[in-house]
Length: 246
Image 1 (cartoon, rainbow, N blue to C red):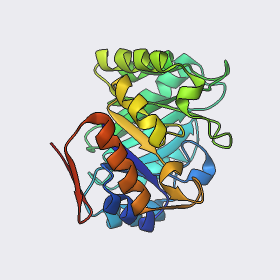
Image 2: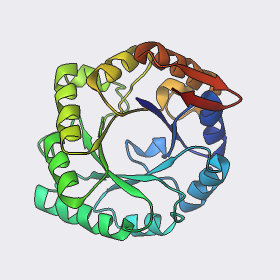
Image 3: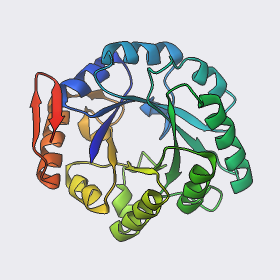
């Protein structure tokens, strides 16, 4: 399982790498689960990472009219993944159309598409199984299960039974998709995330000083990497800002 750390700027990105994050994720945490950073901040994050880690970027929720502008800011090959969610009221047909349009725009760029579902979604949003179906139909690379309510800071495993999450992860992987988990995942949840079989665990608040809108702390990332190493039984060395997994 790989550790993704969401960052809001170049300083956060440098701290995430120093602490041993596997993936650096550009996200404006003040704007919710999939808040997008500005194009200029994205470029600063990409520069700070300098190719040392894969970079992912939140695009927001379809049908946000700003998504084409955010896509235009992606440098060829500089962003490995983009994450897209679906706004309230988007049905399965509409969601599939948005996802296909985005997948078509990304074709040949080297940037893969990850579609997001929410553990705490109401009936007015696409369910997590529907998002897997859309991801499979549009050729997305992966799916993410996150939480909408960031103020409550309820871990995904407090909203859904870990067994249900594991079943969702398995369903995604059977469909050939990468399965990622996020949503107030911290030291106590890393072992649970591992046990679901997820490919990626995403964090923000657990590695920030002052909560999810604070600054990423390299020491906090390093501590979580060690906790993840203990949970997964992996041999993992964190030295000089680099992480090696064997």
